[in-house]
Amino acid sequence: DFLTAATNMRSWNYDIKASPRHAVKVTAGRIIPALATTTAMVCGLVGIEFAKLVLGLQSQGSDKFLNSNINLAAGSGNFTTFAPDPPVPISTGLDAPQPLSFTSWDRIDLSYKLNELSVEQLV
Image (cartoon, rainbow, N blue to C red; front, side):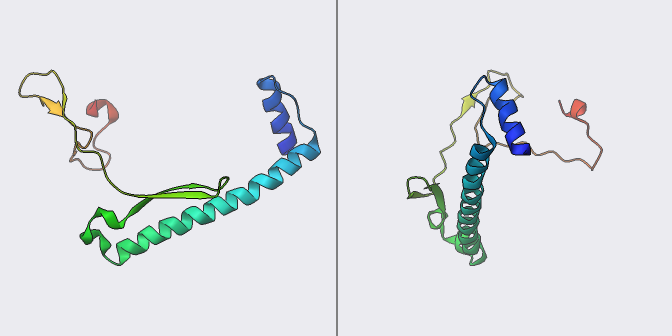
């Protein structure tokens, strides 16, 4: 009954047709198994990649690890090797001693003790 009420409140909010209770139950009955299937597949793929780390394959290069794109509706899967983009320098337009450029791979390391730095002090 909660699903039906929530569905129909959403329908009212977006000015779409309301759904009867049995239609909501049928739709929810299809979604829950799909969520379980997707979750199981993602956990399995993550487990495979984690096993590669446990076996020490990270020292053999990034081509041993895969990015996965799975489409359960179409029954297709795409596996690609991890190939990060090269860093592209972006000019800051600032004068020295400020950094003249940065890349998407740059990072800022902060050294502080816990509860010592507020957001206002950081900015």
